[in-house]
Image 1: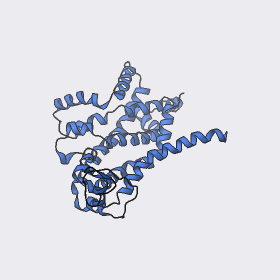
Image 2: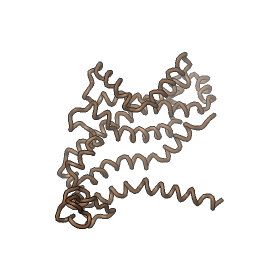
Image 3: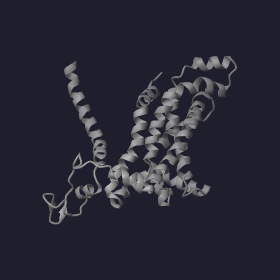
Image 4: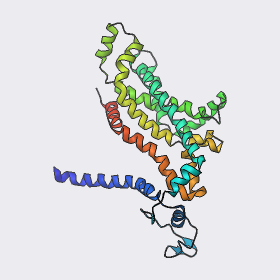
Length: 290
């Protein structure tokens, strides 16, 4: 049995190294000086990079995991001399937090209603939820753009927040877990005189912590990295999230690109590390069949 596990373990190890290497590369390169970054990664031929990596007036990229000299120059420039990037970072936070808070309130309620309250068209509505969940964001942008025009909220965060608040992923995950929730507990609450709301608040809601935490991790990753919605609805450059402006750093401020990338990456890593156990448990509970 142990011999049979060697090959899968090797494959998993290689996949893990490939997945983690970009993060290590970005973090290590964030301790380079701006001049070294330009010398290594720009197409410009300079005195510092003219040599074996230059041919016919073109300088080729010279990758390196470790800088020639460690410095905090990039972080100093980012945190002390570039307030624009800090503003865009907080723009990203302002877009993500309302979505997470709203979904944690709305998704469990909607899932509870679809699973436990008897009404005629609930399965048809849930089927529509699944269809919307499977659609690419680019397709949904068209109706979102039209409705935002009707509501007169184009070029505002509301045009991004409202569709995200009612995204069906949370309802789907939580309802799948509720299918395995012991009906005896809710029947006992009903016998004690509890209505639908009191049953949800005191019996069902406390047992949804794992799947809700898993939902927070998934939604954070999805909304922290929004690009298409911000490009369509946000016209003011300084109102953009950092995910949109990150690509402009390469051409605008190449000497601090890696520090900005680390700055942008840290919240996502922290959320994943803090919620990985909940993510595994929540998805497992949502996929268990009665």
